[in-house]
Length: 360
Image: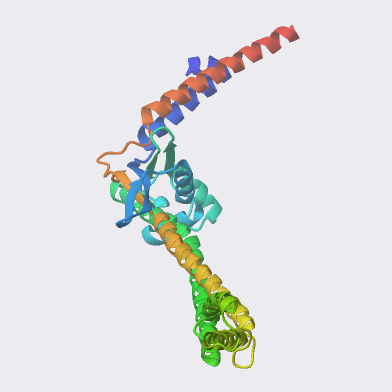
Protein backbone atom coordinates (compact mmCIF):
# COMPACT_ATOMS: atom_id res chain seq x y z
CA UNK A 1 0.00 0.00 0.00
CA UNK A 2 2.89 2.34 0.82
CA UNK A 3 4.44 1.63 -2.55
CA UNK A 4 1.18 2.39 -4.30
CA UNK A 5 0.79 5.60 -2.29
CA UNK A 6 4.28 6.71 -3.19
CA UNK A 7 3.90 5.78 -6.91
CA UNK A 8 3.69 8.53 -9.47
CA UNK A 9 -0.02 9.31 -10.10
CA UNK A 10 0.43 8.91 -13.85
CA UNK A 11 1.74 5.40 -13.55
CA UNK A 12 -0.80 4.59 -10.86
CA UNK A 13 -3.66 5.60 -13.18
CA UNK A 14 -2.04 3.59 -15.98
CA UNK A 15 -1.71 0.48 -13.81
CA UNK A 16 -5.27 0.71 -12.49
CA UNK A 17 -6.62 1.21 -16.04
CA UNK A 18 -4.72 -1.81 -17.34
CA UNK A 19 -6.01 -3.96 -14.48
CA UNK A 20 -9.62 -2.83 -14.92
CA UNK A 21 -9.67 -3.14 -18.70
CA UNK A 22 -7.77 -6.43 -18.62
CA UNK A 23 -10.22 -7.79 -16.04
CA UNK A 24 -13.12 -6.79 -18.31
CA UNK A 25 -11.68 -8.29 -21.50
CA UNK A 26 -10.39 -11.47 -19.89
CA UNK A 27 -13.27 -12.25 -17.53
CA UNK A 28 -16.37 -10.11 -18.01
CA UNK A 29 -16.76 -9.57 -21.77
CA UNK A 30 -19.51 -11.76 -23.23
CA UNK A 31 -18.69 -14.34 -25.86
CA UNK A 32 -19.72 -13.58 -29.45
CA UNK A 33 -19.94 -16.14 -32.23
CA UNK A 34 -19.01 -15.27 -35.81
CA UNK A 35 -20.56 -16.81 -38.92
CA UNK A 36 -18.89 -16.19 -42.29
CA UNK A 37 -19.79 -16.64 -45.95
CA UNK A 38 -18.14 -15.81 -49.26
CA UNK A 39 -20.31 -14.96 -52.26
CA UNK A 40 -20.08 -13.78 -55.86
CA UNK A 41 -22.79 -12.42 -58.17
CA UNK A 42 -23.39 -14.37 -61.37
CA UNK A 43 -25.40 -12.87 -64.23
CA UNK A 44 -26.90 -14.60 -67.26
CA UNK A 45 -25.28 -13.58 -70.55
CA UNK A 46 -27.91 -14.37 -73.20
CA UNK A 47 -26.97 -14.40 -76.88
CA UNK A 48 -28.92 -15.24 -80.01
CA UNK A 49 -27.60 -17.99 -82.25
CA UNK A 50 -28.91 -19.81 -85.27
CA UNK A 51 -30.41 -22.50 -83.06
CA UNK A 52 -32.11 -20.07 -80.69
CA UNK A 53 -31.08 -18.41 -77.45
CA UNK A 54 -27.92 -19.48 -75.66
CA UNK A 55 -27.29 -18.50 -72.04
CA UNK A 56 -24.09 -18.70 -70.04
CA UNK A 57 -23.23 -17.43 -66.59
CA UNK A 58 -20.60 -14.74 -66.28
CA UNK A 59 -18.77 -13.53 -63.23
CA UNK A 60 -19.69 -10.60 -61.07
CA UNK A 61 -18.55 -7.01 -61.54
CA UNK A 62 -17.23 -4.72 -58.84
CA UNK A 63 -20.21 -2.43 -59.34
CA UNK A 64 -22.71 -5.22 -58.59
CA UNK A 65 -20.74 -6.33 -55.55
CA UNK A 66 -20.53 -2.77 -54.20
CA UNK A 67 -24.28 -2.31 -54.65
CA UNK A 68 -24.91 -5.57 -52.81
CA UNK A 69 -22.46 -4.55 -50.07
CA UNK A 70 -24.21 -1.22 -49.46
CA UNK A 71 -27.59 -2.95 -49.33
CA UNK A 72 -26.40 -5.57 -46.84
CA UNK A 73 -25.22 -2.76 -44.55
CA UNK A 74 -28.29 -0.58 -45.04
CA UNK A 75 -31.05 0.31 -42.60
CA UNK A 76 -33.52 -1.56 -44.82
CA UNK A 77 -31.59 -4.78 -44.34
CA UNK A 78 -31.39 -4.16 -40.59
CA UNK A 79 -35.16 -3.67 -40.34
CA UNK A 80 -35.83 -6.92 -42.22
CA UNK A 81 -33.40 -8.81 -40.01
CA UNK A 82 -34.99 -7.34 -36.90
CA UNK A 83 -38.46 -8.24 -38.13
CA UNK A 84 -37.60 -11.88 -38.80
CA UNK A 85 -34.94 -12.55 -36.13
CA UNK A 86 -35.88 -9.99 -33.44
CA UNK A 87 -32.32 -8.64 -33.31
CA UNK A 88 -33.14 -5.87 -30.87
CA UNK A 89 -34.09 -8.38 -28.19
CA UNK A 90 -31.12 -10.58 -29.06
CA UNK A 91 -28.50 -7.81 -28.83
CA UNK A 92 -30.12 -6.26 -25.73
CA UNK A 93 -30.34 -9.55 -23.79
CA UNK A 94 -29.64 -9.02 -20.06
CA UNK A 95 -27.14 -11.91 -19.94
CA UNK A 96 -24.70 -9.88 -22.05
CA UNK A 97 -22.18 -7.65 -20.38
CA UNK A 98 -23.10 -4.02 -20.01
CA UNK A 99 -20.56 -2.68 -22.51
CA UNK A 100 -21.20 -5.07 -25.40
CA UNK A 101 -24.98 -5.24 -25.39
CA UNK A 102 -27.47 -2.85 -26.94
CA UNK A 103 -28.47 -0.35 -24.29
CA UNK A 104 -32.20 -0.88 -24.86
CA UNK A 105 -34.60 -2.54 -27.25
CA UNK A 106 -36.24 0.83 -27.83
CA UNK A 107 -33.18 2.74 -28.99
CA UNK A 108 -33.63 4.93 -32.12
CA UNK A 109 -32.95 3.28 -35.44
CA UNK A 110 -29.85 5.44 -35.92
CA UNK A 111 -28.26 4.08 -32.74
CA UNK A 112 -29.35 0.55 -33.57
CA UNK A 113 -27.81 0.85 -37.04
CA UNK A 114 -24.50 2.05 -35.61
CA UNK A 115 -24.51 -0.97 -33.30
CA UNK A 116 -25.39 -3.23 -36.24
CA UNK A 117 -22.40 -1.96 -38.23
CA UNK A 118 -20.14 -3.01 -35.32
CA UNK A 119 -21.52 -6.55 -35.41
CA UNK A 120 -21.66 -7.08 -39.20
CA UNK A 121 -18.74 -6.92 -41.61
CA UNK A 122 -19.02 -6.97 -45.42
CA UNK A 123 -15.71 -6.70 -47.27
CA UNK A 124 -15.03 -6.68 -51.01
CA UNK A 125 -12.02 -8.65 -52.20
CA UNK A 126 -11.29 -6.67 -55.36
CA UNK A 127 -8.65 -9.11 -56.60
CA UNK A 128 -10.85 -12.21 -56.35
CA UNK A 129 -14.12 -10.29 -56.95
CA UNK A 130 -15.60 -11.98 -53.89
CA UNK A 131 -17.76 -10.47 -51.18
CA UNK A 132 -16.87 -11.72 -47.68
CA UNK A 133 -19.77 -11.45 -45.22
CA UNK A 134 -19.58 -12.06 -41.48
CA UNK A 135 -21.92 -11.43 -38.56
CA UNK A 136 -21.50 -11.62 -34.80
CA UNK A 137 -24.19 -12.85 -32.42
CA UNK A 138 -24.52 -14.18 -28.90
CA UNK A 139 -25.15 -17.75 -30.09
CA UNK A 140 -24.07 -19.69 -33.20
CA UNK A 141 -27.62 -20.26 -34.46
CA UNK A 142 -28.40 -16.54 -34.62
CA UNK A 143 -25.05 -15.69 -36.21
CA UNK A 144 -25.65 -18.19 -38.99
CA UNK A 145 -29.27 -17.10 -39.43
CA UNK A 146 -28.19 -13.46 -39.84
CA UNK A 147 -25.74 -14.25 -42.64
CA UNK A 148 -28.16 -16.65 -44.38
CA UNK A 149 -30.98 -14.10 -44.35
CA UNK A 150 -28.67 -11.32 -45.53
CA UNK A 151 -27.66 -13.34 -48.60
CA UNK A 152 -31.24 -14.32 -49.38
CA UNK A 153 -32.61 -10.78 -49.12
CA UNK A 154 -29.62 -9.40 -51.02
CA UNK A 155 -30.26 -11.69 -54.01
CA UNK A 156 -33.95 -10.69 -54.10
CA UNK A 157 -33.00 -7.01 -54.00
CA UNK A 158 -30.47 -7.31 -56.85
CA UNK A 159 -33.02 -9.09 -59.05
CA UNK A 160 -35.76 -6.57 -58.27
CA UNK A 161 -33.50 -3.68 -59.24
CA UNK A 162 -32.70 -5.16 -62.66
CA UNK A 163 -36.19 -6.48 -63.36
CA UNK A 164 -37.93 -3.23 -62.47
CA UNK A 165 -36.15 -1.36 -65.26
CA UNK A 166 -36.26 -4.25 -67.74
CA UNK A 167 -39.98 -4.88 -67.22
CA UNK A 168 -40.74 -1.20 -67.71
CA UNK A 169 -38.87 -1.22 -71.01
CA UNK A 170 -40.62 -4.42 -72.14
CA UNK A 171 -44.06 -3.02 -71.29
CA UNK A 172 -43.33 0.19 -73.19
CA UNK A 173 -42.20 -1.65 -76.33
CA UNK A 174 -45.14 -4.06 -76.12
CA UNK A 175 -47.50 -1.07 -76.23
CA UNK A 176 -45.61 0.28 -79.24
CA UNK A 177 -45.83 -3.09 -80.99
CA UNK A 178 -49.59 -3.27 -80.45
CA UNK A 179 -50.02 0.30 -81.73
CA UNK A 180 -47.94 -0.39 -84.84
CA UNK A 181 -49.84 -3.63 -85.44
CA UNK A 182 -53.13 -1.73 -85.41
CA UNK A 183 -51.67 0.90 -87.75
CA UNK A 184 -50.49 -1.81 -90.14
CA UNK A 185 -53.91 -3.48 -90.20
CA UNK A 186 -55.59 -0.11 -90.78
CA UNK A 187 -53.24 0.80 -93.63
CA UNK A 188 -53.73 -2.63 -95.23
CA UNK A 189 -57.53 -2.29 -95.01
CA UNK A 190 -57.38 1.13 -96.68
CA UNK A 191 -55.27 -0.31 -99.53
CA UNK A 192 -57.64 -3.25 -100.05
CA UNK A 193 -60.68 -0.96 -100.04
CA UNK A 194 -59.00 1.26 -102.64
CA UNK A 195 -58.30 -1.76 -104.87
CA UNK A 196 -61.88 -3.02 -104.56
CA UNK A 197 -63.35 0.42 -105.22
CA UNK A 198 -61.51 0.86 -108.53
CA UNK A 199 -61.47 -2.80 -109.57
CA UNK A 200 -57.68 -2.79 -109.95
CA UNK A 201 -55.35 -5.08 -108.10
CA UNK A 202 -52.34 -2.95 -108.93
CA UNK A 203 -52.75 0.25 -110.98
CA UNK A 204 -48.99 0.55 -111.64
CA UNK A 205 -48.97 -2.94 -113.15
CA UNK A 206 -52.06 -2.06 -115.21
CA UNK A 207 -50.31 1.05 -116.52
CA UNK A 208 -47.25 -1.00 -117.38
CA UNK A 209 -49.37 -3.61 -119.15
CA UNK A 210 -51.25 -1.01 -121.22
CA UNK A 211 -48.01 0.74 -122.07
CA UNK A 212 -46.62 -2.55 -123.28
CA UNK A 213 -49.72 -3.13 -125.46
CA UNK A 214 -49.44 0.38 -126.95
CA UNK A 215 -45.75 -0.16 -127.65
CA UNK A 216 -46.49 -3.45 -129.44
CA UNK A 217 -49.26 -1.86 -131.52
CA UNK A 218 -47.00 1.02 -132.49
CA UNK A 219 -44.37 -1.44 -133.67
CA UNK A 220 -47.02 -3.20 -135.78
CA UNK A 221 -48.18 0.17 -137.15
CA UNK A 222 -44.65 1.07 -138.13
CA UNK A 223 -44.30 -2.23 -140.03
CA UNK A 224 -47.67 -1.71 -141.74
CA UNK A 225 -46.67 1.80 -142.88
CA UNK A 226 -43.41 0.47 -144.22
CA UNK A 227 -45.24 -2.27 -146.11
CA UNK A 228 -47.70 0.24 -147.62
CA UNK A 229 -44.84 2.46 -148.71
CA UNK A 230 -43.21 -0.47 -150.45
CA UNK A 231 -46.47 -1.40 -152.23
CA UNK A 232 -47.05 2.18 -153.40
CA UNK A 233 -44.00 1.93 -155.62
CA UNK A 234 -45.41 -0.89 -157.73
CA UNK A 235 -49.19 -0.67 -157.21
CA UNK A 236 -51.90 1.94 -157.49
CA UNK A 237 -53.89 3.28 -154.57
CA UNK A 238 -56.96 1.27 -155.65
CA UNK A 239 -55.27 -2.09 -155.89
CA UNK A 240 -56.51 -4.80 -153.44
CA UNK A 241 -53.17 -5.00 -151.64
CA UNK A 242 -53.03 -1.22 -151.10
CA UNK A 243 -56.61 -1.14 -149.86
CA UNK A 244 -55.92 -4.04 -147.46
CA UNK A 245 -52.78 -2.34 -146.20
CA UNK A 246 -54.64 0.91 -145.68
CA UNK A 247 -57.41 -0.86 -143.73
CA UNK A 248 -54.80 -2.57 -141.54
CA UNK A 249 -53.13 0.75 -140.79
CA UNK A 250 -56.44 2.41 -139.88
CA UNK A 251 -57.32 -0.51 -137.56
CA UNK A 252 -53.96 -0.26 -135.79
CA UNK A 253 -54.32 3.50 -135.39
CA UNK A 254 -57.81 3.11 -133.88
CA UNK A 255 -56.58 0.40 -131.53
CA UNK A 256 -53.62 2.53 -130.42
CA UNK A 257 -55.95 5.48 -129.81
CA UNK A 258 -58.24 3.25 -127.78
CA UNK A 259 -55.41 1.84 -125.64
CA UNK A 260 -54.02 5.32 -125.07
CA UNK A 261 -57.46 6.44 -123.96
CA UNK A 262 -57.57 3.53 -121.50
CA UNK A 263 -54.14 4.48 -120.26
CA UNK A 264 -55.22 8.06 -119.66
CA UNK A 265 -58.71 7.31 -118.39
CA UNK A 266 -60.00 4.47 -116.18
CA UNK A 267 -63.41 4.45 -114.48
CA UNK A 268 -63.79 8.13 -115.08
CA UNK A 269 -60.37 8.97 -113.60
CA UNK A 270 -56.90 9.07 -115.07
CA UNK A 271 -55.14 5.75 -114.63
CA UNK A 272 -51.84 7.45 -113.92
CA UNK A 273 -53.53 9.35 -111.07
CA UNK A 274 -54.88 6.07 -109.68
CA UNK A 275 -51.39 4.58 -109.92
CA UNK A 276 -49.94 7.56 -108.02
CA UNK A 277 -52.55 7.26 -105.25
CA UNK A 278 -52.00 3.52 -105.07
CA UNK A 279 -48.25 4.01 -104.73
CA UNK A 280 -48.77 6.38 -101.80
CA UNK A 281 -51.08 3.91 -100.03
CA UNK A 282 -48.72 1.01 -100.72
CA UNK A 283 -45.76 3.06 -99.47
CA UNK A 284 -47.65 3.76 -96.24
CA UNK A 285 -48.31 0.03 -95.79
CA UNK A 286 -44.66 -0.86 -96.39
CA UNK A 287 -43.43 1.87 -94.05
CA UNK A 288 -45.77 0.70 -91.29
CA UNK A 289 -44.73 -2.92 -91.89
CA UNK A 290 -41.05 -2.00 -91.50
CA UNK A 291 -41.79 -0.11 -88.27
CA UNK A 292 -43.75 -3.09 -86.96
CA UNK A 293 -40.91 -5.48 -87.85
CA UNK A 294 -38.36 -3.21 -86.14
CA UNK A 295 -40.55 -2.99 -83.03
CA UNK A 296 -40.84 -6.78 -82.82
CA UNK A 297 -37.05 -7.08 -83.11
CA UNK A 298 -36.59 -4.45 -80.40
CA UNK A 299 -39.06 -6.30 -78.18
CA UNK A 300 -37.15 -9.57 -78.50
CA UNK A 301 -33.84 -7.82 -77.82
CA UNK A 302 -35.31 -6.13 -74.75
CA UNK A 303 -36.57 -9.47 -73.46
CA UNK A 304 -33.07 -10.86 -73.90
CA UNK A 305 -31.68 -7.90 -71.95
CA UNK A 306 -34.28 -8.53 -69.25
CA UNK A 307 -32.98 -12.10 -68.95
CA UNK A 308 -29.45 -10.74 -68.67
CA UNK A 309 -30.49 -8.54 -65.75
CA UNK A 310 -31.11 -11.62 -63.61
CA UNK A 311 -28.54 -11.76 -60.83
CA UNK A 312 -27.75 -14.85 -58.81
CA UNK A 313 -25.86 -14.60 -55.55
CA UNK A 314 -23.67 -17.69 -55.80
CA UNK A 315 -22.32 -18.87 -52.47
CA UNK A 316 -18.69 -19.96 -52.53
CA UNK A 317 -18.73 -20.72 -48.81
CA UNK A 318 -22.03 -21.32 -47.04
CA UNK A 319 -22.65 -19.45 -43.78
CA UNK A 320 -20.57 -21.27 -41.22
CA UNK A 321 -21.89 -22.66 -37.94
CA UNK A 322 -19.36 -21.49 -35.32
CA UNK A 323 -18.49 -24.09 -32.69
CA UNK A 324 -16.73 -21.69 -30.34
CA UNK A 325 -16.64 -17.94 -29.84
CA UNK A 326 -13.94 -15.95 -31.59
CA UNK A 327 -15.02 -12.51 -30.39
CA UNK A 328 -13.96 -10.59 -28.47
CA UNK A 329 -10.25 -11.26 -28.92
CA UNK A 330 -9.62 -11.10 -25.24
CA UNK A 331 -5.84 -11.41 -24.94
CA UNK A 332 -5.28 -9.24 -28.04
CA UNK A 333 -7.54 -6.45 -26.77
CA UNK A 334 -6.05 -6.50 -23.28
CA UNK A 335 -2.50 -6.48 -24.65
CA UNK A 336 -3.16 -3.65 -27.08
CA UNK A 337 -4.79 -1.57 -24.37
CA UNK A 338 -1.87 -2.20 -22.00
CA UNK A 339 0.67 -1.12 -24.63
CA UNK A 340 -1.30 2.01 -25.50
CA UNK A 341 -1.78 2.86 -21.80
CA UNK A 342 1.94 2.45 -21.08
CA UNK A 343 2.86 4.64 -24.06
CA UNK A 344 0.34 7.27 -22.99
CA UNK A 345 1.70 7.19 -19.42
CA UNK A 346 5.27 7.46 -20.69
CA UNK A 347 4.43 10.43 -22.92
CA UNK A 348 2.54 12.09 -20.06
CA UNK A 349 5.47 11.53 -17.70
CA UNK A 350 7.89 13.09 -20.22
CA UNK A 351 5.61 16.11 -20.69
CA UNK A 352 5.34 16.58 -16.93
CA UNK A 353 9.13 16.37 -16.58
CA UNK A 354 9.66 18.92 -19.36
CA UNK A 355 7.19 21.33 -17.73
CA UNK A 356 8.95 20.98 -14.36
CA UNK A 357 12.32 21.63 -15.93
CA UNK A 358 11.05 24.83 -17.49
CA UNK A 359 9.58 25.99 -14.18
CA UNK A 360 12.89 25.39 -12.42
